Image 1: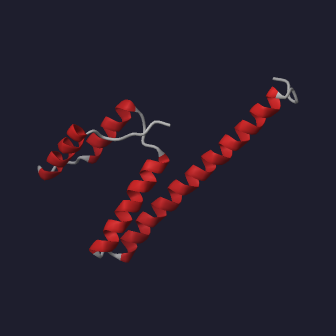
Image 2: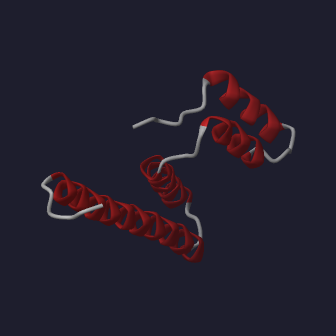
Length: 102
């Protein structure tokens, strides 16, 4: 499994954009998509970290609830992919055993 992590130079460029009042999210997305996409587990970890930050900083309940919903959505997508992998693996095993003709 590949991990998608920004290198130090890329992180510094994002921070500089933020300091200059520019949008860094599009740049970060472009950098990550150049290599490939962010994994669900990496996204979930980031959103959970954001939730901790929001809790420490006293963000509004509605805002925290919206971010929690994102966590739920990511977990649901992860579960969906896991189920699909299990189904695919089952059929691969059945084909190898000769129980299904392809």
